[in-house]
Length: 294
Image 1 (cartoon, one colour):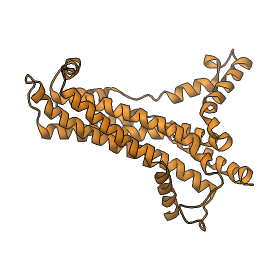
Image 2 (image 1 turned 90 degrees about the horizontal axis):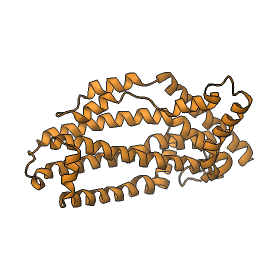
Image 3 (image 1 turned 135 degrees about the vertical axis):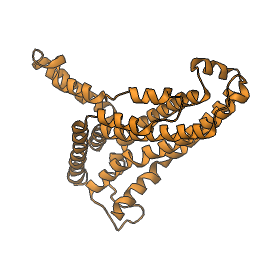
Image 4 (image 1 turned 90 degrees about the vertical axis):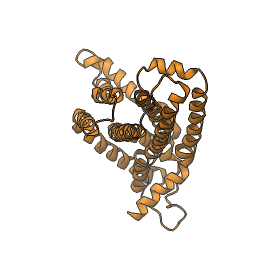
């Protein structure tokens, strides 16, 4: 276990620039944007777009910023998995201890674990700081727009905490749902390196087209594979509790919101996807040990 944690730490040290330093720089840019918005007339345009109290304006703004951070993390994770499995194909050393080589499966599994825990966790922490920045902005709104009532600090902090818990749980569900796609891209990178980026899409599409040609009359939508992938990539969830949390005038009902989210998840598909990811990583480790390293 200590060796596995050290491998995850190695992944953090090698990729902290993209997942920690760059988000901190973007957070500073966001702070400058918020400050400039408060000091100009653009803040009135935003208030008119989201009518209501500063608390409601804060909830919507936090949701938008958290969504942008998720897209940032998803993009980075895709490119991370498309290169990480191939980057150190001939080096199984653990950190700086060259005399402690690790198995290929443990190496690749540590990359998968880091990609679905440490790296999105770092981005989520930056999203939390963004939420606190927006709390300060919401408190400053009445000073810029005198017609707005001064919000209660405890209410804003309660809203920040409740929405953060909801966002965190939703992030965990999303990562569990999409982990087979990350593992698929990583396994391809073991085979073809950076060509995994286009091939991750071209291979399923090519199989679907071939299947549609030979079995176009019986396959739903022209392809069983494409129909399954379309349903698998479309993560369906109950958006009503999140929208209700955003539009609520008071703190978020965390328990009720999470209960609605968890109940709507297709857990057999989720568990099957995690199992598929582990199997794919194991097969990639066999290829890496027997073919790449001989």
